[in-house]
Length: 304
Image 1: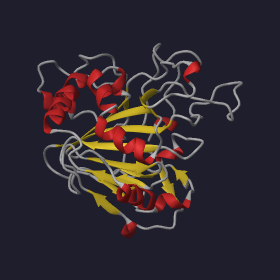
Image 2: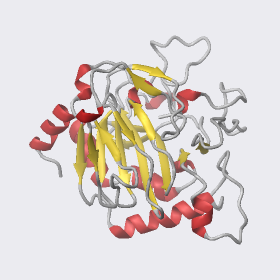
Image 3: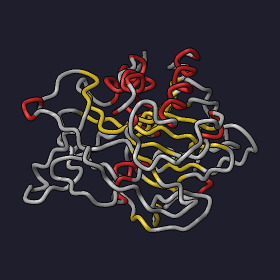
Image 4: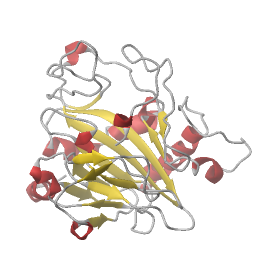
């Protein structure tokens, strides 16, 4: 259970570490689930790299850097999304009513790139600035294997800094935040033991560097949550005013959904995020990406 001091720290610094939120048994189960997902045994993942079934698990999973929305095909990941240790923090610093709109499974093997400076709220806008990420270490995350770096307090400006394209081979295809009044000297590494979680505000500047080790992984499971009482103006729709836009491909994890009368939608399908090593082309949508979303390449707004 988090206390008053934890809430103050989160408000001031924009992030909070909770050690050993998941047990090692739970972490091991997520390792096995990662293999099943990458082998295509749980369902379709758009853009999943081809492999020979005779290849080892390591050979199969190390081809992939990040899978978006794995909770759509993994009951285990959906269960972890609602993990009591995570929900305890969310209800303490966000709201009694919390919804989740995204999951990401990172498999950063040795040699894989990191992600440039960015703010998650740039990509998932909330009307009340309540976006919060929960970054779960599935391996010990260290400076060497590409842990997160954050700029403490950078969320307090309340500014979404300009995004610019970048072609630095140290990073994947994510656009980079620029123009902010901080330097790398202001950043601190967030080294975590497997099973620990770092929560961070949607306005907090953060990045990760490449995994420069020669073997192994820096696997992580990431969820994004927000206050369920706030509309989510994500994914514009033709003819719908942004003032009333409310993205409904969500999962409630705590409390009540004030907009439950709208129902929910199944909009996104699990898909691979390009690492940049072979270009930045996104996989195309499938029929599972329904309704108002036409078949077209996944847009860069999907990057977070």
